[in-house]
Length: 600
Image (cartoon, rainbow, N blue to C red):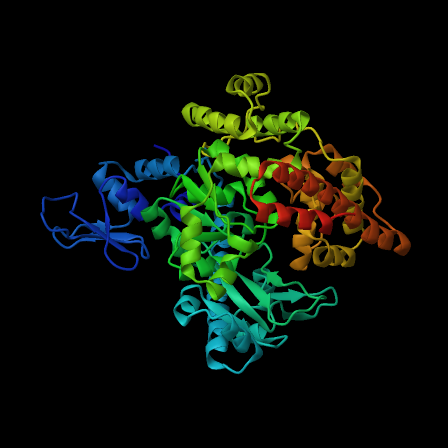
Protein backbone atom coordinates (compact mmCIF):
# COMPACT_ATOMS: atom_id res chain seq x y z
CA UNK A 1 0.00 0.00 0.00
CA UNK A 2 1.40 3.43 -0.95
CA UNK A 3 2.55 5.61 1.93
CA UNK A 4 0.84 8.91 2.67
CA UNK A 5 3.02 12.01 2.03
CA UNK A 6 4.50 13.57 5.15
CA UNK A 7 2.84 16.89 4.37
CA UNK A 8 -0.58 15.23 4.53
CA UNK A 9 0.28 13.20 7.64
CA UNK A 10 1.11 16.43 9.47
CA UNK A 11 -2.19 18.01 8.38
CA UNK A 12 -4.17 14.93 9.51
CA UNK A 13 -2.54 14.90 12.93
CA UNK A 14 -2.91 18.67 13.33
CA UNK A 15 -6.66 18.46 12.80
CA UNK A 16 -7.23 15.30 14.83
CA UNK A 17 -8.20 15.26 18.50
CA UNK A 18 -7.63 12.09 20.52
CA UNK A 19 -10.55 12.75 22.89
CA UNK A 20 -13.01 13.15 20.01
CA UNK A 21 -11.86 9.96 18.32
CA UNK A 22 -11.68 7.71 21.40
CA UNK A 23 -14.99 9.09 22.71
CA UNK A 24 -16.67 7.94 19.47
CA UNK A 25 -15.70 4.35 20.40
CA UNK A 26 -15.48 4.43 24.21
CA UNK A 27 -17.64 6.83 26.32
CA UNK A 28 -15.26 9.09 28.24
CA UNK A 29 -15.94 11.03 31.43
CA UNK A 30 -14.16 14.19 32.58
CA UNK A 31 -11.38 13.59 35.09
CA UNK A 32 -9.81 16.97 35.71
CA UNK A 33 -8.37 19.71 33.53
CA UNK A 34 -7.73 18.25 30.06
CA UNK A 35 -8.03 14.65 31.28
CA UNK A 36 -10.64 11.97 30.63
CA UNK A 37 -11.16 8.40 31.79
CA UNK A 38 -13.11 5.23 30.96
CA UNK A 39 -13.08 1.50 31.46
CA UNK A 40 -10.30 0.16 29.28
CA UNK A 41 -11.43 -1.12 25.86
CA UNK A 42 -8.47 -3.52 25.74
CA UNK A 43 -9.21 -5.57 28.86
CA UNK A 44 -12.15 -6.23 31.20
CA UNK A 45 -12.40 -4.07 34.30
CA UNK A 46 -15.06 -2.58 36.59
CA UNK A 47 -13.14 0.49 37.78
CA UNK A 48 -11.89 2.92 35.11
CA UNK A 49 -8.14 2.85 34.72
CA UNK A 50 -7.97 4.02 31.09
CA UNK A 51 -6.89 7.69 30.98
CA UNK A 52 -6.76 10.11 28.04
CA UNK A 53 -4.89 13.44 28.07
CA UNK A 54 -6.21 16.01 25.63
CA UNK A 55 -3.31 18.34 26.35
CA UNK A 56 -0.68 15.71 25.51
CA UNK A 57 -2.86 13.90 22.94
CA UNK A 58 -2.02 10.54 24.52
CA UNK A 59 -3.76 7.68 26.39
CA UNK A 60 -2.64 5.12 28.95
CA UNK A 61 -4.26 2.26 30.85
CA UNK A 62 -2.90 1.70 34.34
CA UNK A 63 -4.44 -1.78 34.31
CA UNK A 64 -3.03 -3.38 31.15
CA UNK A 65 -0.26 -0.78 30.56
CA UNK A 66 -1.30 -0.12 26.98
CA UNK A 67 -0.83 3.44 25.78
CA UNK A 68 0.25 5.73 23.00
CA UNK A 69 -1.13 8.38 20.66
CA UNK A 70 -4.17 8.50 18.42
CA UNK A 71 -2.49 6.35 15.75
CA UNK A 72 -1.54 3.72 18.33
CA UNK A 73 -5.12 3.58 19.60
CA UNK A 74 -6.65 3.14 16.16
CA UNK A 75 -4.16 0.46 15.15
CA UNK A 76 -4.90 -1.50 18.32
CA UNK A 77 -8.66 -0.89 18.52
CA UNK A 78 -9.47 -1.31 14.80
CA UNK A 79 -6.78 -3.93 14.14
CA UNK A 80 -5.42 -1.84 11.26
CA UNK A 81 -2.00 -0.66 10.15
CA UNK A 82 -0.41 2.82 10.23
CA UNK A 83 -1.74 3.85 6.83
CA UNK A 84 -5.20 2.51 7.62
CA UNK A 85 -5.32 4.57 10.82
CA UNK A 86 -4.29 7.70 8.93
CA UNK A 87 -6.90 7.08 6.23
CA UNK A 88 -9.57 6.72 8.90
CA UNK A 89 -8.56 10.08 10.44
CA UNK A 90 -8.35 11.74 7.02
CA UNK A 91 -11.94 10.72 6.30
CA UNK A 92 -13.15 11.90 9.70
CA UNK A 93 -11.46 15.30 9.49
CA UNK A 94 -11.94 15.91 5.74
CA UNK A 95 -8.29 15.83 4.69
CA UNK A 96 -7.69 14.97 1.03
CA UNK A 97 -4.88 12.44 0.56
CA UNK A 98 -2.94 13.17 -2.68
CA UNK A 99 -1.67 10.40 -4.91
CA UNK A 100 1.99 11.35 -4.55
CA UNK A 101 4.41 14.09 -3.47
CA UNK A 102 7.87 14.54 -4.94
CA UNK A 103 11.01 14.28 -2.76
CA UNK A 104 11.70 17.98 -3.42
CA UNK A 105 8.25 18.89 -2.10
CA UNK A 106 8.83 16.74 0.99
CA UNK A 107 12.17 18.47 1.67
CA UNK A 108 10.61 21.90 1.24
CA UNK A 109 7.83 20.92 3.58
CA UNK A 110 10.25 19.72 6.28
CA UNK A 111 12.10 23.05 6.03
CA UNK A 112 8.82 24.98 6.40
CA UNK A 113 7.84 22.87 9.38
CA UNK A 114 11.15 23.61 11.07
CA UNK A 115 10.70 27.33 10.40
CA UNK A 116 7.13 27.20 11.72
CA UNK A 117 8.30 25.52 14.92
CA UNK A 118 10.69 28.41 15.49
CA UNK A 119 7.88 30.92 14.88
CA UNK A 120 5.71 29.10 17.43
CA UNK A 121 8.57 29.16 19.93
CA UNK A 122 9.11 32.88 19.27
CA UNK A 123 5.44 33.68 19.84
CA UNK A 124 5.46 31.79 23.13
CA UNK A 125 8.53 33.73 24.31
CA UNK A 126 7.04 37.11 23.36
CA UNK A 127 3.75 36.16 25.00
CA UNK A 128 5.66 35.34 28.20
CA UNK A 129 7.31 38.77 27.93
CA UNK A 130 3.94 40.52 27.61
CA UNK A 131 2.39 38.55 30.50
CA UNK A 132 5.35 39.38 32.78
CA UNK A 133 5.11 43.06 31.79
CA UNK A 134 1.46 43.24 32.87
CA UNK A 135 2.00 41.47 36.19
CA UNK A 136 5.31 43.03 37.26
CA UNK A 137 4.45 46.66 36.47
CA UNK A 138 1.09 47.37 38.16
CA UNK A 139 1.59 51.14 37.83
CA UNK A 140 2.14 51.11 34.07
CA UNK A 141 -0.56 52.73 31.88
CA UNK A 142 -1.58 49.35 30.43
CA UNK A 143 -1.82 47.72 33.88
CA UNK A 144 -3.93 50.61 35.17
CA UNK A 145 -6.22 50.28 32.16
CA UNK A 146 -6.42 46.51 32.67
CA UNK A 147 -7.55 47.11 36.26
CA UNK A 148 -10.55 49.10 34.96
CA UNK A 149 -11.71 46.05 32.98
CA UNK A 150 -12.18 44.12 36.26
CA UNK A 151 -10.98 40.85 34.72
CA UNK A 152 -9.91 38.41 37.46
CA UNK A 153 -6.33 37.17 37.20
CA UNK A 154 -7.62 33.62 36.84
CA UNK A 155 -9.11 34.58 33.47
CA UNK A 156 -6.17 36.79 32.53
CA UNK A 157 -3.95 33.74 32.93
CA UNK A 158 -6.37 31.42 31.14
CA UNK A 159 -6.51 33.73 28.11
CA UNK A 160 -2.88 34.86 28.40
CA UNK A 161 -3.54 38.59 28.60
CA UNK A 162 -0.44 40.76 28.70
CA UNK A 163 0.96 44.23 28.12
CA UNK A 164 3.11 45.39 25.21
CA UNK A 165 5.68 47.82 26.71
CA UNK A 166 5.66 51.45 25.65
CA UNK A 167 8.77 50.85 23.56
CA UNK A 168 9.69 50.62 19.90
CA UNK A 169 12.08 47.70 20.38
CA UNK A 170 11.24 45.72 23.54
CA UNK A 171 10.04 42.65 21.62
CA UNK A 172 12.76 43.11 18.99
CA UNK A 173 15.56 43.13 21.59
CA UNK A 174 14.01 40.26 23.57
CA UNK A 175 13.68 38.08 20.47
CA UNK A 176 17.25 38.75 19.36
CA UNK A 177 18.57 38.02 22.85
CA UNK A 178 16.93 34.59 22.62
CA UNK A 179 18.69 33.83 19.34
CA UNK A 180 15.98 34.71 16.83
CA UNK A 181 17.03 36.62 13.73
CA UNK A 182 15.63 39.94 12.61
CA UNK A 183 14.14 38.24 9.53
CA UNK A 184 12.36 35.71 11.77
CA UNK A 185 10.94 38.50 13.90
CA UNK A 186 9.69 40.29 10.79
CA UNK A 187 8.23 37.03 9.39
CA UNK A 188 6.38 36.49 12.68
CA UNK A 189 4.61 39.85 12.36
CA UNK A 190 5.74 40.78 15.88
CA UNK A 191 7.96 43.50 14.42
CA UNK A 192 7.65 45.61 11.28
CA UNK A 193 10.28 46.59 8.74
CA UNK A 194 9.25 49.79 6.93
CA UNK A 195 10.26 50.93 3.45
CA UNK A 196 13.25 52.79 4.85
CA UNK A 197 14.52 49.57 6.43
CA UNK A 198 13.75 50.58 10.02
CA UNK A 199 12.60 47.68 12.23
CA UNK A 200 10.34 48.27 15.23
CA UNK A 201 7.72 46.55 17.41
CA UNK A 202 4.21 46.21 15.98
CA UNK A 203 2.57 46.21 19.43
CA UNK A 204 3.39 49.13 21.74
CA UNK A 205 1.69 50.38 24.90
CA UNK A 206 -1.36 48.17 24.37
CA UNK A 207 -3.22 45.42 26.21
CA UNK A 208 -2.39 42.18 24.40
CA UNK A 209 -4.51 39.08 23.85
CA UNK A 210 -2.72 35.91 22.78
CA UNK A 211 -4.34 34.21 19.78
CA UNK A 212 -3.98 30.43 19.97
CA UNK A 213 -4.67 27.60 17.54
CA UNK A 214 -6.67 24.42 18.15
CA UNK A 215 -3.75 22.97 20.10
CA UNK A 216 -3.59 26.09 22.33
CA UNK A 217 -0.28 27.26 20.82
CA UNK A 218 0.25 31.02 20.52
CA UNK A 219 0.21 31.96 16.83
CA UNK A 220 -0.53 35.70 16.95
CA UNK A 221 -1.67 38.66 18.99
CA UNK A 222 -4.46 41.18 19.13
CA UNK A 223 -3.59 44.40 20.96
CA UNK A 224 -6.12 46.93 22.26
CA UNK A 225 -5.45 50.63 22.61
CA UNK A 226 -5.66 51.93 26.20
CA UNK A 227 -6.24 55.63 25.49
CA UNK A 228 -8.76 56.73 22.89
CA UNK A 229 -6.99 58.09 19.82
CA UNK A 230 -8.92 59.00 16.68
CA UNK A 231 -5.73 58.61 14.64
CA UNK A 232 -4.98 55.06 15.80
CA UNK A 233 -7.00 51.86 15.36
CA UNK A 234 -8.72 50.44 18.45
CA UNK A 235 -7.11 47.05 17.81
CA UNK A 236 -3.85 46.14 16.09
CA UNK A 237 -3.69 42.48 15.04
CA UNK A 238 -0.95 40.16 13.84
CA UNK A 239 -0.83 39.98 10.03
CA UNK A 240 -1.21 36.73 8.12
CA UNK A 241 1.90 34.60 8.64
CA UNK A 242 3.02 31.03 8.01
CA UNK A 243 1.40 29.96 11.30
CA UNK A 244 -1.46 32.48 11.60
CA UNK A 245 -4.45 32.47 9.24
CA UNK A 246 -7.11 34.58 10.91
CA UNK A 247 -9.97 33.19 8.82
CA UNK A 248 -9.32 29.70 10.22
CA UNK A 249 -8.97 30.59 13.90
CA UNK A 250 -11.56 31.15 16.62
CA UNK A 251 -10.47 33.14 19.67
CA UNK A 252 -10.95 31.05 22.82
CA UNK A 253 -11.59 27.80 20.95
CA UNK A 254 -8.96 25.83 22.88
CA UNK A 255 -10.47 27.06 26.18
CA UNK A 256 -14.07 26.43 25.05
CA UNK A 257 -13.84 23.08 23.24
CA UNK A 258 -14.61 20.87 26.27
CA UNK A 259 -17.59 23.01 27.29
CA UNK A 260 -18.95 23.07 23.73
CA UNK A 261 -18.85 19.30 23.51
CA UNK A 262 -20.24 18.85 27.03
CA UNK A 263 -23.12 21.34 26.66
CA UNK A 264 -23.96 20.61 23.04
CA UNK A 265 -23.72 24.19 21.73
CA UNK A 266 -21.29 27.05 21.07
CA UNK A 267 -21.72 30.80 21.52
CA UNK A 268 -20.08 32.98 18.86
CA UNK A 269 -19.27 36.50 20.12
CA UNK A 270 -17.77 39.47 18.30
CA UNK A 271 -14.49 40.00 20.13
CA UNK A 272 -12.00 38.99 22.79
CA UNK A 273 -13.43 40.94 25.72
CA UNK A 274 -16.95 39.66 25.05
CA UNK A 275 -15.66 36.09 24.89
CA UNK A 276 -13.81 36.49 28.18
CA UNK A 277 -16.93 38.04 29.75
CA UNK A 278 -18.97 35.01 28.73
CA UNK A 279 -16.41 32.68 30.29
CA UNK A 280 -16.46 34.75 33.48
CA UNK A 281 -20.24 34.33 33.53
CA UNK A 282 -19.84 30.56 33.41
CA UNK A 283 -20.73 30.33 29.71
CA UNK A 284 -17.40 28.75 28.85
CA UNK A 285 -18.54 27.58 25.42
CA UNK A 286 -18.00 31.08 23.99
CA UNK A 287 -15.60 31.86 21.12
CA UNK A 288 -15.07 34.73 18.66
CA UNK A 289 -13.85 35.07 15.06
CA UNK A 290 -10.41 36.60 14.83
CA UNK A 291 -9.91 39.83 12.93
CA UNK A 292 -12.79 39.67 10.45
CA UNK A 293 -16.37 38.43 10.27
CA UNK A 294 -17.38 34.86 11.15
CA UNK A 295 -16.44 32.58 8.23
CA UNK A 296 -17.32 29.08 6.96
CA UNK A 297 -13.87 27.75 7.87
CA UNK A 298 -14.43 28.82 11.46
CA UNK A 299 -17.91 27.30 11.48
CA UNK A 300 -16.32 24.01 10.39
CA UNK A 301 -14.23 24.04 13.57
CA UNK A 302 -17.43 24.25 15.62
CA UNK A 303 -19.25 21.71 13.46
CA UNK A 304 -16.80 19.05 14.67
CA UNK A 305 -17.99 19.70 18.24
CA UNK A 306 -21.69 20.60 17.94
CA UNK A 307 -24.61 21.25 15.57
CA UNK A 308 -26.00 24.18 17.57
CA UNK A 309 -24.68 27.75 17.53
CA UNK A 310 -25.88 30.81 19.44
CA UNK A 311 -24.86 34.04 17.70
CA UNK A 312 -24.07 36.90 20.08
CA UNK A 313 -23.36 39.88 17.85
CA UNK A 314 -24.00 43.52 18.74
CA UNK A 315 -27.62 44.64 18.87
CA UNK A 316 -26.95 47.58 16.55
CA UNK A 317 -27.70 47.47 12.84
CA UNK A 318 -24.21 46.20 11.98
CA UNK A 319 -24.42 43.34 14.46
CA UNK A 320 -27.89 42.32 13.34
CA UNK A 321 -26.74 42.48 9.74
CA UNK A 322 -23.79 40.25 10.63
CA UNK A 323 -26.15 37.74 12.22
CA UNK A 324 -28.22 37.55 9.05
CA UNK A 325 -25.14 37.36 6.82
CA UNK A 326 -23.67 34.21 8.39
CA UNK A 327 -26.90 32.24 7.95
CA UNK A 328 -26.05 31.97 4.26
CA UNK A 329 -23.28 29.45 4.99
CA UNK A 330 -24.45 28.07 8.36
CA UNK A 331 -27.82 26.73 7.17
CA UNK A 332 -26.43 24.45 4.41
CA UNK A 333 -24.25 22.92 7.13
CA UNK A 334 -27.42 21.72 8.92
CA UNK A 335 -26.67 23.83 11.98
CA UNK A 336 -29.35 24.85 14.46
CA UNK A 337 -29.07 28.62 14.88
CA UNK A 338 -30.24 30.90 17.68
CA UNK A 339 -29.30 34.47 18.55
CA UNK A 340 -28.81 36.17 21.89
CA UNK A 341 -30.64 39.46 22.26
CA UNK A 342 -29.01 41.61 24.93
CA UNK A 343 -31.08 44.36 26.54
CA UNK A 344 -30.25 47.95 25.75
CA UNK A 345 -27.86 47.07 22.93
CA UNK A 346 -25.09 46.33 25.42
CA UNK A 347 -22.42 43.73 24.80
CA UNK A 348 -21.48 40.88 27.19
CA UNK A 349 -18.47 42.79 28.55
CA UNK A 350 -20.66 45.78 29.52
CA UNK A 351 -23.33 43.53 31.01
CA UNK A 352 -20.81 41.67 33.18
CA UNK A 353 -19.56 45.00 34.55
CA UNK A 354 -22.95 46.63 35.15
CA UNK A 355 -25.56 43.88 35.60
CA UNK A 356 -23.89 40.56 36.26
CA UNK A 357 -23.91 37.05 34.78
CA UNK A 358 -27.61 36.36 35.43
CA UNK A 359 -28.59 38.67 32.55
CA UNK A 360 -26.41 36.69 30.13
CA UNK A 361 -27.82 33.36 31.32
CA UNK A 362 -31.37 34.70 30.92
CA UNK A 363 -30.60 35.94 27.40
CA UNK A 364 -29.37 32.46 26.56
CA UNK A 365 -32.62 30.91 27.81
CA UNK A 366 -34.72 33.39 25.81
CA UNK A 367 -32.65 33.32 22.60
CA UNK A 368 -34.97 33.46 19.56
CA UNK A 369 -34.76 30.75 16.93
CA UNK A 370 -33.97 30.85 13.26
CA UNK A 371 -37.26 32.11 11.81
CA UNK A 372 -37.47 34.91 14.38
CA UNK A 373 -33.95 36.00 13.42
CA UNK A 374 -34.81 35.98 9.72
CA UNK A 375 -38.10 37.86 10.03
CA UNK A 376 -36.58 40.50 12.32
CA UNK A 377 -33.84 41.14 9.75
CA UNK A 378 -36.36 41.32 6.91
CA UNK A 379 -38.51 43.79 8.83
CA UNK A 380 -35.56 46.19 8.73
CA UNK A 381 -35.19 45.80 4.96
CA UNK A 382 -38.79 45.69 3.76
CA UNK A 383 -42.11 47.35 4.55
CA UNK A 384 -43.94 44.31 5.94
CA UNK A 385 -47.11 46.36 6.21
CA UNK A 386 -47.41 46.35 2.41
CA UNK A 387 -48.14 43.41 0.15
CA UNK A 388 -45.10 44.03 -2.10
CA UNK A 389 -42.85 44.31 0.95
CA UNK A 390 -44.09 41.03 2.41
CA UNK A 391 -43.73 39.33 -0.97
CA UNK A 392 -40.10 40.45 -1.28
CA UNK A 393 -39.44 39.38 2.29
CA UNK A 394 -40.98 35.98 1.58
CA UNK A 395 -38.74 35.55 -1.48
CA UNK A 396 -35.60 36.22 0.55
CA UNK A 397 -36.70 34.09 3.50
CA UNK A 398 -37.68 31.13 1.31
CA UNK A 399 -34.38 31.30 -0.57
CA UNK A 400 -32.47 31.31 2.72
CA UNK A 401 -34.49 28.70 4.61
CA UNK A 402 -34.68 26.56 1.51
CA UNK A 403 -30.95 25.89 1.89
CA UNK A 404 -31.59 23.82 5.05
CA UNK A 405 -30.72 20.24 3.97
CA UNK A 406 -33.05 18.44 6.40
CA UNK A 407 -36.50 18.35 4.69
CA UNK A 408 -38.41 18.00 7.98
CA UNK A 409 -36.64 20.94 9.61
CA UNK A 410 -37.11 22.96 6.42
CA UNK A 411 -40.87 22.30 6.39
CA UNK A 412 -41.19 23.30 10.05
CA UNK A 413 -39.31 26.52 9.33
CA UNK A 414 -41.66 27.25 6.42
CA UNK A 415 -44.65 26.79 8.72
CA UNK A 416 -43.19 29.32 11.18
CA UNK A 417 -42.46 31.70 8.31
CA UNK A 418 -46.03 31.39 7.05
CA UNK A 419 -47.35 32.43 10.47
CA UNK A 420 -44.83 35.25 10.87
CA UNK A 421 -45.51 36.87 7.47
CA UNK A 422 -49.23 35.97 7.40
CA UNK A 423 -48.80 34.23 4.04
CA UNK A 424 -50.53 30.88 3.34
CA UNK A 425 -48.21 27.92 3.71
CA UNK A 426 -49.00 26.62 0.23
CA UNK A 427 -47.79 29.93 -1.21
CA UNK A 428 -44.52 29.57 0.72
CA UNK A 429 -43.99 26.10 -0.74
CA UNK A 430 -44.90 27.33 -4.22
CA UNK A 431 -42.24 30.03 -3.94
CA UNK A 432 -39.76 27.41 -2.77
CA UNK A 433 -40.42 25.15 -5.75
CA UNK A 434 -40.31 28.03 -8.22
CA UNK A 435 -37.29 29.89 -6.89
CA UNK A 436 -34.96 27.37 -5.33
CA UNK A 437 -31.45 28.69 -5.06
CA UNK A 438 -28.66 27.19 -7.17
CA UNK A 439 -26.83 24.39 -5.35
CA UNK A 440 -24.51 25.65 -2.64
CA UNK A 441 -21.22 24.25 -1.60
CA UNK A 442 -21.55 21.51 1.03
CA UNK A 443 -19.14 22.75 3.70
CA UNK A 444 -19.28 19.39 5.50
CA UNK A 445 -18.06 17.44 2.46
CA UNK A 446 -14.56 16.88 1.17
CA UNK A 447 -13.60 19.75 -1.19
CA UNK A 448 -13.59 19.05 -4.88
CA UNK A 449 -10.36 19.10 -6.84
CA UNK A 450 -11.28 22.36 -8.54
CA UNK A 451 -13.56 24.62 -6.53
CA UNK A 452 -14.35 27.32 -9.07
CA UNK A 453 -16.67 30.12 -7.98
CA UNK A 454 -20.21 29.98 -9.26
CA UNK A 455 -20.97 32.25 -12.19
CA UNK A 456 -24.50 32.82 -10.86
CA UNK A 457 -25.01 35.70 -8.43
CA UNK A 458 -27.88 37.11 -6.42
CA UNK A 459 -29.69 40.06 -7.99
CA UNK A 460 -28.45 43.46 -6.87
CA UNK A 461 -31.39 44.94 -4.97
CA UNK A 462 -29.52 47.99 -3.67
CA UNK A 463 -31.05 51.40 -4.39
CA UNK A 464 -29.09 53.34 -7.00
CA UNK A 465 -27.90 55.80 -4.33
CA UNK A 466 -26.38 52.97 -2.27
CA UNK A 467 -24.79 51.36 -5.33
CA UNK A 468 -23.16 54.64 -6.39
CA UNK A 469 -22.01 55.54 -2.85
CA UNK A 470 -20.40 52.16 -2.16
CA UNK A 471 -18.62 52.14 -5.53
CA UNK A 472 -17.28 55.65 -4.88
CA UNK A 473 -16.11 54.72 -1.38
CA UNK A 474 -14.29 51.65 -2.72
CA UNK A 475 -12.51 53.79 -5.31
CA UNK A 476 -11.58 56.18 -2.50
CA UNK A 477 -10.16 53.29 -0.43
CA UNK A 478 -8.18 52.10 -3.44
CA UNK A 479 -6.77 55.56 -4.08
CA UNK A 480 -4.38 55.58 -1.11
CA UNK A 481 -3.61 53.76 2.12
CA UNK A 482 -4.17 56.97 4.11
CA UNK A 483 -7.71 57.21 2.74
CA UNK A 484 -8.38 53.59 3.66
CA UNK A 485 -7.27 54.30 7.23
CA UNK A 486 -9.60 57.31 7.39
CA UNK A 487 -12.50 55.21 6.16
CA UNK A 488 -11.72 52.51 8.72
CA UNK A 489 -11.93 55.14 11.47
CA UNK A 490 -14.80 57.29 10.16
CA UNK A 491 -17.17 55.05 8.15
CA UNK A 492 -19.69 53.20 10.36
CA UNK A 493 -19.87 49.57 9.23
CA UNK A 494 -23.64 49.43 9.66
CA UNK A 495 -24.08 51.89 6.78
CA UNK A 496 -22.72 49.36 4.29
CA UNK A 497 -24.87 46.77 2.51
CA UNK A 498 -24.15 43.07 2.05
CA UNK A 499 -23.00 43.51 -1.56
CA UNK A 500 -19.64 42.19 -2.84
CA UNK A 501 -18.43 45.80 -3.25
CA UNK A 502 -19.15 46.48 0.42
CA UNK A 503 -17.40 43.22 1.34
CA UNK A 504 -14.22 44.41 -0.41
CA UNK A 505 -14.47 47.77 1.32
CA UNK A 506 -14.77 46.06 4.72
CA UNK A 507 -11.79 43.83 3.90
CA UNK A 508 -9.62 46.79 2.90
CA UNK A 509 -10.53 48.70 6.09
CA UNK A 510 -9.71 45.63 8.20
CA UNK A 511 -6.38 45.26 6.42
CA UNK A 512 -5.53 48.90 7.00
CA UNK A 513 -5.83 48.39 10.76
CA UNK A 514 -3.04 45.79 10.45
CA UNK A 515 -0.85 48.08 8.35
CA UNK A 516 -1.73 46.13 5.18
CA UNK A 517 -3.07 47.56 1.91
CA UNK A 518 -3.48 45.98 -1.51
CA UNK A 519 -4.92 46.94 -4.90
CA UNK A 520 -5.64 45.24 -8.20
CA UNK A 521 -4.83 41.57 -8.72
CA UNK A 522 -2.99 41.35 -5.40
CA UNK A 523 -6.16 42.35 -3.56
CA UNK A 524 -8.29 40.09 -5.75
CA UNK A 525 -6.20 37.10 -4.67
CA UNK A 526 -7.02 37.80 -1.03
CA UNK A 527 -10.81 37.87 -1.50
CA UNK A 528 -13.21 34.96 -1.24
CA UNK A 529 -13.95 33.24 -4.59
CA UNK A 530 -17.53 34.56 -4.68
CA UNK A 531 -16.50 38.17 -4.09
CA UNK A 532 -13.49 37.94 -6.42
CA UNK A 533 -15.78 36.69 -9.21
CA UNK A 534 -18.22 39.60 -8.91
CA UNK A 535 -18.23 41.65 -12.09
CA UNK A 536 -18.63 45.02 -10.36
CA UNK A 537 -15.75 44.30 -7.99
CA UNK A 538 -13.45 43.35 -10.86
CA UNK A 539 -14.50 46.43 -12.79
CA UNK A 540 -13.78 48.76 -9.87
CA UNK A 541 -10.40 47.13 -9.15
CA UNK A 542 -9.43 47.67 -12.78
CA UNK A 543 -10.56 51.30 -12.76
CA UNK A 544 -8.10 54.16 -12.32
CA UNK A 545 -8.41 55.07 -8.64
CA UNK A 546 -6.44 58.34 -8.79
CA UNK A 547 -8.59 61.06 -7.24
CA UNK A 548 -7.90 64.72 -6.62
CA UNK A 549 -7.93 66.01 -3.05
CA UNK A 550 -11.22 67.81 -3.76
CA UNK A 551 -12.81 64.60 -5.10
CA UNK A 552 -11.63 62.65 -2.07
CA UNK A 553 -13.16 65.12 0.37
CA UNK A 554 -16.45 65.25 -1.57
CA UNK A 555 -16.73 61.44 -1.47
CA UNK A 556 -15.98 61.44 2.27
CA UNK A 557 -18.69 64.02 2.87
CA UNK A 558 -21.40 62.92 0.44
CA UNK A 559 -21.32 59.11 0.28
CA UNK A 560 -21.71 58.23 3.99
CA UNK A 561 -24.52 60.81 4.13
CA UNK A 562 -26.27 59.12 1.20
CA UNK A 563 -25.92 55.73 2.86
CA UNK A 564 -27.29 57.11 6.11
CA UNK A 565 -30.35 58.53 4.32
CA UNK A 566 -31.09 55.10 2.82
CA UNK A 567 -30.62 53.48 6.21
CA UNK A 568 -33.11 55.94 7.71
CA UNK A 569 -35.65 55.09 5.01
CA UNK A 570 -35.46 51.40 5.90
CA UNK A 571 -35.60 52.11 9.61
CA UNK A 572 -38.65 54.36 9.20
CA UNK A 573 -40.45 51.66 7.21
CA UNK A 574 -39.71 49.05 9.89
CA UNK A 575 -40.79 51.39 12.71
CA UNK A 576 -44.04 52.33 10.95
CA UNK A 577 -44.85 48.65 10.49
CA UNK A 578 -44.13 47.96 14.17
CA UNK A 579 -46.18 50.99 15.20
CA UNK A 580 -49.15 49.55 13.33
CA UNK A 581 -48.71 46.09 14.89
CA UNK A 582 -47.95 46.90 18.56
CA UNK A 583 -50.58 47.62 21.22
CA UNK A 584 -48.06 48.65 23.87
CA UNK A 585 -48.46 52.43 24.57
CA UNK A 586 -44.91 52.71 25.92
CA UNK A 587 -43.47 51.10 22.81
CA UNK A 588 -45.68 53.29 20.58
CA UNK A 589 -44.32 56.41 22.31
CA UNK A 590 -40.76 55.17 21.91
CA UNK A 591 -41.32 54.48 18.19
CA UNK A 592 -42.81 57.95 17.63
CA UNK A 593 -39.86 59.53 19.43
CA UNK A 594 -37.42 57.60 17.26
CA UNK A 595 -39.31 58.55 14.08
CA UNK A 596 -38.85 62.21 14.98
CA UNK A 597 -35.14 61.64 15.65
CA UNK A 598 -34.41 60.10 12.26
CA UNK A 599 -36.48 62.54 10.23
CA UNK A 600 -34.23 63.90 7.46
